[in-house]
Image (cartoon, rainbow, N blue to C red; front, side, top):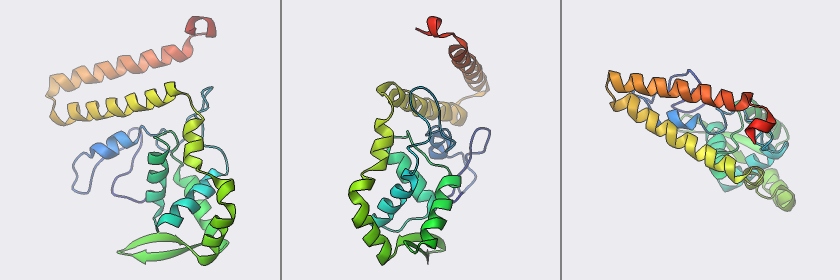
Length: 196
């Protein structure tokens, strides 16, 4: 993955100078590090086919690299949809093969931009494409949006403990996280009657 910080569960969230990166640390909670969340609330991968539309619409605004495309989709969907590199980069390659997207080098980065054919294609399909990130965000209930927000806030709080806490505080935080994890699995283990 492009970008100064990448990682997932168990990964190392470090910035360019080896320090823990709070943005990277909390970023993993947006959509499960790009793996997609599935469940009855509809929080799976965003509607199929929208990755292509999202890429074209974002590149119409300005050239971007793959990492920036993934981050922008996550931001515009309020963290609900974060497509993985495995869906974004093949889509970019396909768009390049169709001559709708071209690659350019800028400051050592590989940026994707729309070709003239790509601009015309977006214009012709704008009504059909709509705003795919809004569709993804609107596909889940308010409970999920609240949960995603709490996940980010908890990640930020946990980072502060890791960064500023002493050994005893870190140990307490670890115990709290273990209890929270067990509690979440207990919720999933409950049958429908008990859950209601």
